[in-house]
Every structure is written in C-alpha cells, then in structure tokens.
Length: 200
Ligand code: ITT
Image (cartoon, rainbow, N blue to C red; front, side):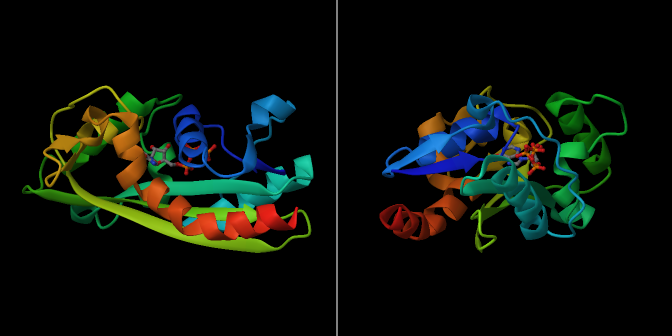
C-alpha cells in the first residue's frame, strides 16, 4: 500500500485533503503522525514553486512520496491580491484568519461591487527520487462585505458562489470538497496517484 504524506500545517487543508483522497487505495499520513514539524519558507514566485518547495522538504524529511498544496485567493479589484500571500495577508503580528478577512474587506471598501474573485490551488507531488508531478484547480465566486457561515477556513465566510446561493462557509464539507479549487486540483492528480499506488 502506498504511503502518501500530506505536507501541510493548515488543519483545514489537511482535513479536506484527507477527505478528498480517502477513497484511494493509499494510506494518507499527516506530518503530526510522523512527528515531523518543519517550517518551509515560501520563497517561490508561483503556487507551483511554493507547492514544490513544501512537497520536496517533507519528502526529504520523511523519505515518503509527499503531496503539498499551495493556494490563495485572487481578487480582481485588487489586481489578484492577496494571491500567493493569502496566508500572510494582514499587517499585524500573529494575525488569524479573521484578521485577514477584515483587512481584505477594508482594502476592498473603496472599490465598486461585485468583487469578483477566485480561489486557486496547485498540488505538487514529490517522490523521494526527486520526480515531481503537478495539478491545478480554481473556483470562481465573489467577495461579499459580511461574513456568512462557520464551515471551512480562511476566506470561506466571505467567498460567495452565486450559482450555489451561499458562501463556501455555509456549505457542508462534502459539498465544498466537490467544488473547491483544492478538490479540482486533487481530482486531476488522482489518476497519477493511482498509477503510483499500483507501482508500490
Ligand atoms: P501550508 O502551507 O502548511 O499548507 P498555509 O495555510 O500556509 O498552509 P498556503 O501558503 O497555501 O497554506 O496559504 C493558503 C492560504 O490561502 C490559506 O492560509 C487561506 O488564507 C487561503 N485559502 C486557501 N484555500 C482556501 C480555502 O479553501 N478556503 C479559504 N481560504 C483558503
């Protein structure tokens, strides 16, 4: 059975990735289970570069094939910000997800609505021999000025999907895991993972 490490320290992401991959004949492992705690500096200039940095660092630390996700929220009125910097977006120390949502809404306040936006994710899978595989996914919607719902994480309470009539934080986890940027990227990576599992 293929053991696959998920290289993330974000509990929301880990939960989602574990759920999305649960039907594969693969043993999904989190860094905590291996006692691995490493900090990877996200110095890349794209989601793919950052995902690769994370996947390679954890693959090296564990000796296991490793899957990492780098993702972000791109808001058109802010020329694609916060984008790559989504997890670091708020000019205060120890900011949390709520602080980042408040900062985003403050920056958007002067712009006319609707505030179109998309979540983007790139998955990188690193094998211990250094071989890499990538997959991307995106999810379109708009930012709304008040928080709705308590599910998900990050910017989900202010990310509204008109065709669903709700924010991502108002969806149940199964629904988010069918339509999210992360789900779409992982869906594209599934065939590759199945081949990898067969080889093991
Ligand atoms: P790891 O690097 O340890 O995986 P991270 O949270 O630092 O965790 P990223 O660098 O990829 O991960 O930052 C992604 C940020 O984008 C995340 O912290 C959220 O602020 C935002 N984001 C990504 N996916 C999201 C989602 O599904 N819902 C809401 N916000 C999301």
